[in-house]
Image (cartoon, rainbow, N blue to C red):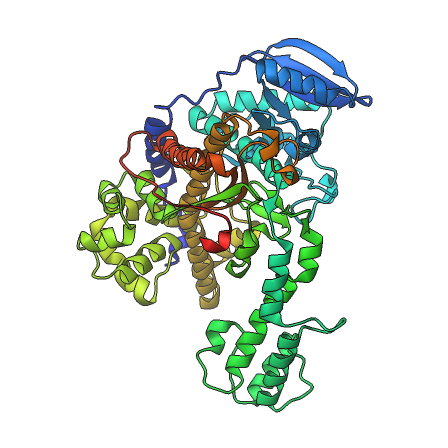
Length: 602
């Protein structure tokens, strides 16, 4: 047998899965997660009309109504006010965007496409009731403008089916798959959180992030210099001239990576790439102007005047969020680069007159999530009420905060060399439960297995090429290069699964935070018409609303008179999310919270 560990079957995946499942069940099911909705209303289309079917909590049909598309908004608003059913639809943007444009918000929904993707791959789903064979529901989202959210669509370019019979059949499959799963409570909570995230993505696009176009323009002019016709801004042109002079090549193309590399090599700067970290390891007159040129060009191309013209309208930045767009469950962005706004531009994020921004982010979210998942009381104690890395130092596990951070991040991301590789063994002694969880996740990935987040989102299986490479390396006639390649790809997959369980669970905590906060904000009374923020649209002009979300940070746009109430809602919802996922396990999620006029003051 080959010495390549990744080429052997370890036979440990099921015991680890059972242990994680038991831990989840003891925490998640201690909180009521089964829906108490009296009515599930499924929406679909047929023959140019909208069909609404009411189901009871057990899925039995109670009533059916046909509506013209024009009659839907008023009817739905009346139903929402009277019953607040859980609206079931094929894809949230396909229904909710138009409702928001009419000023109609809904309390809760069930997004069939998003939930299908979760249940299709979840290892906790043991009997899928035909769900995995329903390939039409594998289609990606279709975003505003008619473009699909995720790359190559093939036969699914039109999105999932929206007819009523398909929607009812898919809901039945999903409910049966949930009921027969090993962790129905956790998966139902994940389905509800994912669907709430889909509502929020539409709402944040409709309301927009308050954006001061004149402030953005001033930032660009200050950083880049004045624009001169169709030419590059003055400061970029000057830095380009400095680079060419330092290289002794007045005609070199700075935006062609191969040509720039050749020019650097001719000048004696022997680099393999033009990344900043590699350039700054060398001493040469070209380094400083080239690094500055790249920084300015990045701002100009990613968030310059063209971006401002395309994505900011009427004082609002309206990006296209894609919930679940990353395999771990993190959100992606299909337009506008909402997840990549540089700190330099935060001064352009400015509340409307009489309103404010309540900004909150979670300190060291993923390490705290790891402590809760592993039920590691020592790591949770290090984090309680303070900076987690300082807590690790206080416990004597490592001597400095910098080393504690390098070691813990290395443990979660699979760094095995350098300072991280040297320090991680000390973490294993201090926090054995947390380190065992990520180490076991890595071994499972190296062996070709899958891992799951706390609520049950499951990592993708390795592709055919990976499996073939591992199989070839285990052959008696395999060359050493084949074994080396297999070991490397196994380690890469282990690093992925090691982080998947933590990053994915952190995304679940964030969704629970957002969903709870959304309901708390909706319960606040409207402000007077004179105090409204009309550019947020009729659905949000008179109430605090979430305006931005990025992994562990949120921005709420709120009337000044509601600032303290909103801050309290933000804190309470963070605490609630921790209890919802992890029960009474003693881990806290402290927030860095500020109430400001502009995000640049944060």
